[in-house]
Length: 249
Image (cartoon, rainbow, N blue to C red; front, top):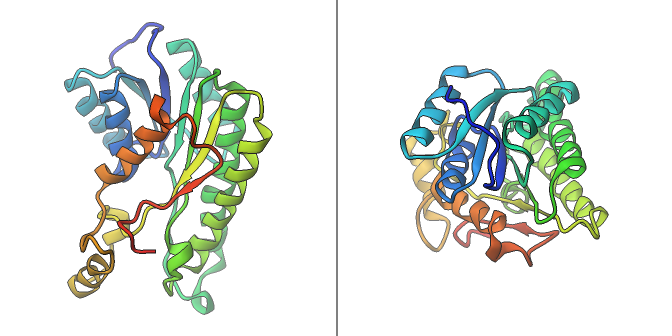
C-alpha cells in the first residue's frame, strides 16, 4: 500500500468498495479528485485490485478492512481515515447482502445475516459518519428499486432496504444545521456479479427489457449518480431517495 500524507483534498470512505457498484464508486470519486478509503469485509485481494486500479489512474487511496455491523471495527476505519488524510467529507455505504428466496422458504439465519449487514451495518456506518463528517459533507446510502417492483424472492432484501430508506430520511433531518446531506440511491436491475448470480439468460434478458431504455444498468451508471450527490452540484439534494433505474418504476 502506498503511504499518503494528510491531504487538502476532500476525503471519501466507500464501504463495499472492493467489488461491484462500490468499486466503481470508489474509482469515480478518486477520478473526481477525492482521496478514497476502500472499505472491505474480507476479500483482501479484491480490495488490493481496486486500490491498484485507482493508483494506476493517479488516484489517492488505501484499503481498510471492517465488518460494517461491528461498531468497534467501523470506528477504527473512520479513525484511520482521519489520521491518514486529516478528516472525512463523504461516506458512501455500498456494502450489502442480497439473499434470494421466497419468504416461505427463507432460512432465518440468512434473514439475520442480511439484517445485520444491511440494517445494523447502515446504522453503524451512518452513526460514525454523522459524528465525524466535516461541514459540506455527504452521506450516501444504498436502497433498491425492488421496493417498488416487488419482485418475488426479494422479500428479506427489500425489507432491509425499506429500513435503510427510513433511516436515511430521518438522519437527513436530524443533521439540521450541520451542512451535511444524507440521501439514498436505489438502483434498478444492475449488471453486477451479485445481481447476475444464479439468473439464466432468459431472466436477464427479460429484466433488461423492462426499462424504457431497454438495458440493465451498469455500475458506472450508479457511480455517476453517487458522484453527483457527493459533488458541488448535488448540495441542494437532501433527504431523498434517487431511483436510478432507467425509468423501470
